[in-house]
Length: 229
Image 1 (cartoon, helix red, strand yellow):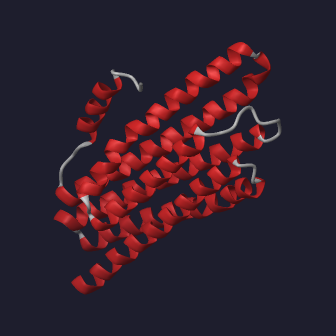
Image 2 (cartoon, rainbow, N blue to C red):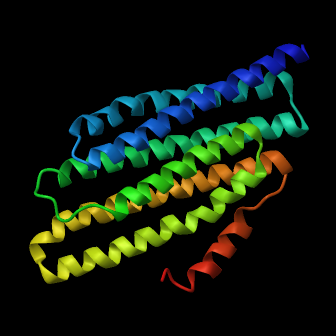
Image 3 (cartoon, helix red, strand yellow):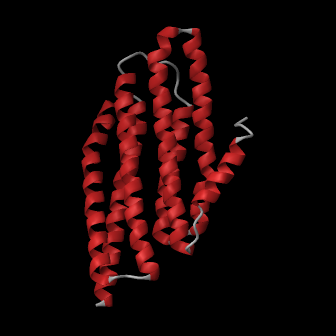
């Protein structure tokens, strides 16, 4: 009976990893779309259905496993964290879709400026997602902590992008539409970083049974008070 349960736990873990791989692909497609590849924007919406279906299947499996096996301690904690992480991945997929939609509008007009900060921001957010999933998979609290510490870089990029684009809009009102699209994309990327951070926090809880969410938020607020330079 225990062996069968262990196999079911591995199966739901593998399904979560597959879902994470799809979410990573969606974020990568969103970045490629910004470079003018419309086909990548289209691919995001194809993958969205897979992410949504995966979340439903994982949540359904988690409920059944808890009902049938009445797990306790680390097994129960694992199943609850799997369900939470699946929810975070579904929201990351939503943000990637938002980027794809905003990119479609942005690409209908001449480029506003060479894109530097947004691709860099996207790269960091994508790295955070990959590392948070690795941390969750391996119950690696140290790697998860690294993700938490990286979140401030994504926030700093968002603030920097907003400041720069505000100067464009003030100087030339004809840039407002394109600037707003880029601002929205930067906010979507920030939210992807936030969801990756949530997964990393879940990884720490999974590995150590230690709750860090409110501690991390307090530290981030204190650090943010000094500005981004």
